[in-house]
Image (cartoon, helix red, strand yellow):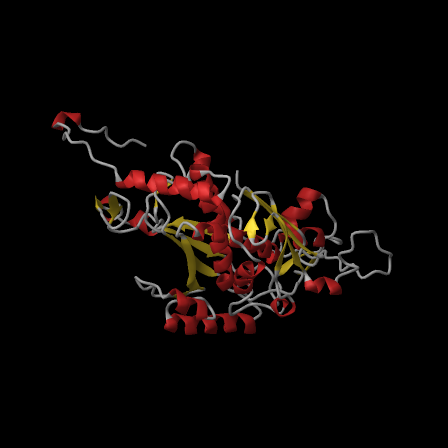
Length: 404
């Protein structure tokens, strides 16, 4: 079973990552992981923390001479900013004169209030340190390993920003992914890019923050990942839950999910036709379903759109209460970004990769990469040899009507 774990606080010593279940024989390196770590730190609207950290995941275990061993992979990401937080985030007790940076003013929209109520803390820092989006650096490191595995099977994952605030991009039918990578807001529409930058600047100037929507696209995903059998094996359900776990995410749709609700069924469902372009016998001529039908991948690109709310920490704080006194105050301000939508794209890519690896290994298995490749290619060859029934069903053998 494939799974991963992360540990660590925003201003603690660092972040720990454990990835378990990857087959042996996958070529990996710290420099490969470094590419995604760097992409996560970029994007217009990022705060000063990114000027301090230069994230690099050090591989501690599970890799030898450039290849995975099949054992758990351990990684460590140092927090350089910890040098300024040694007393506040010390493991051992500290004296009364120590600079502990206690926080008692709650921030609306953050984990502060439910966290201190749930765990019985009287210092919000005990909640905000783990609830911080700093944790996503560890997810991206784990996701890089997942991406490297998927590349062996021709699966690629990209992302772009669809909107920031009320600025919406005109998304072209064919996206120039290299152009997206060079865009400061990861937008495929140059005019929208300029307007998005202005929107972020306005938010910064007014002490505000900005949210938006990004899209993640996984290409060359084989048909048959996930399952219709149980609720917790449906691929769209797995993707939805994983994307919703990203900090500040408040909505996820697969394909044209919300837009499809406004149309009749005849304009929503993707027509199927015979196909000889690859090893599938059929394909869809459109992809409004986002590559998933009945909880299973259908061979088309898997597409998820993700809604990110504006960041909860505002430089012009909202009214709130003080945990220590119970009185009305301005909310706490902790150094933060103005807009996280562009870097959230990279986190979304990693999240998609982690989900896909799980369902991929569930279907194809293998303790070594070559075994997985053998199983994968055997499945695809079987699809190519698929032959329709020679007899045409009579009119009285109609399939049952669809039922909810």
